[in-house]
Image (cartoon, rainbow, N blue to C red; front, side, top):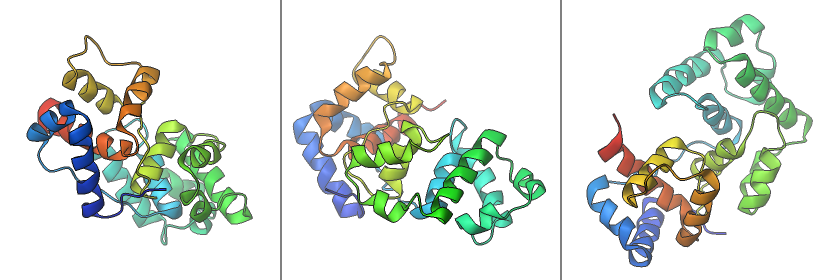
Length: 208
């Protein structure tokens, strides 16, 4: 299984994509630098991804900063033993608190080993993660991209990606998730590099 763990990995993947798809080469001229944006793995990384579900990047950053201040060290054991009033200080919704409690419990009791998940084939890893309540495809795919370095994963449910792809390919509307999944098959085995490119394009050209 290929990984994107270094800037050289991302550069090589993007160069391969530019040859395969002229549209990607065209938007690269407008996107500026494409960041690798790696995050820590394990519970801390998955907790950061869960924190970012369905909120802006700025809001997620502020909440996760409080999270790290309240839960020290940021481990499943430490989260598992936080008092309810301390969890509420973080600013997470009750749904996200419950999701993280389930993940922490799974790691503590041995039913979830993220180091094993990180090395699974991508589809198997997604299936393992989404078995936990509150962890959907987007959360799993983003975790595998940024925390485990998987090269061939594309979070088709991400709104910014759907907007960016619609604009790049001059579509009449945002593609449905399944349609975007099918379109992204053309960018194998570097779908994670394509996703990073489209996010960079969205940030440079389309963000309000």
